[in-house]
Image 1 (cartoon, rainbow, N blue to C red):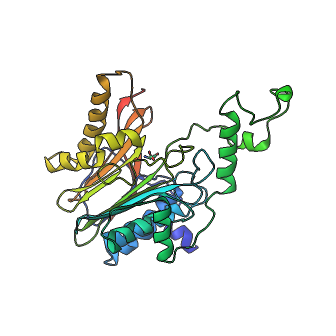
Image 2 (tube, rainbow, N blue to C red):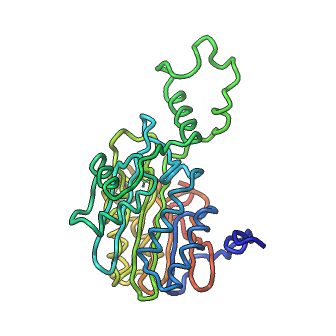
Image 3 (cartoon, helix red, strand yellow):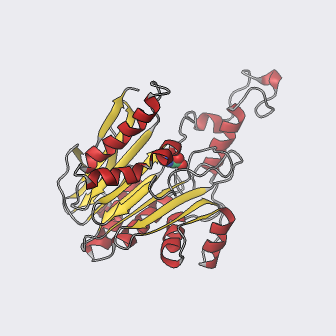
Length: 342
Ligand code: ASP
């Protein structure tokens, strides 16, 4: 049996429904695909060998960022409206109350690592655009093209189908006559506009760290920054309380300071599961005064300093899940839907 099979068995992971007992050390990610599983398996070892939560979180983030098949994070992420991949990431260390982030970072595959360096080697919290790139290069990061063929084709398809009133797409006299080019058939569902990963961990000392990393809203306006690199919105970590992270429509997460809100709820005694749900209800309550039918798409994850976990999404039919690794092994934790079917 090869090492890969030993590390990442293809058996279905245990699924835990809405309940969580506290276990430390612990590492979780909002990613539930094979790469999320792989990131948990590999970085669990960092924690069990006495490594820090900061190290485990960074390496898990890098595993996900470097997956070229993942169109929501790092290398292979979907580009902005101009076809340029712009990445956002944040890092927070609950032990030292330190945070670092990068926004609109181009041409660097692992923005989580750059965010960690901002956190540990500057007196700033957030670097953007060219400044973030200059900083990364100063630390020896190599500039690379982040746009994979897969992401480029999805972007082209989006561009061609964006509007009938521009000149992208087949000539008018051939519209609806010729067969679609294969790249259009290859990616029929372009509804994917969101996607991000949160990674939260507690090490054997009880220290907590977290990271949120993303290519952000796909086809966004050049320069748009989402919630992921905003401390208190896409991520917050406090050793005394726990950690929380957000994915989904970042504009709502920024306005509601959702990650900080979840931490405050847990500080008041709510479980991580309740805190995730509270934050979603809080957002809908704000909109209910002006647009009662508006339910933005978000998914929140949280852990407590005791090692409990929680996860909730705003709407849909299928309960959200997250990947959890603790001494009981790898499991998929199933959370709740705040507004089912919306
Ligand atoms: N929250 C991210 C953003 O708004 C996107 C996502 O999580 O899907 O950039």
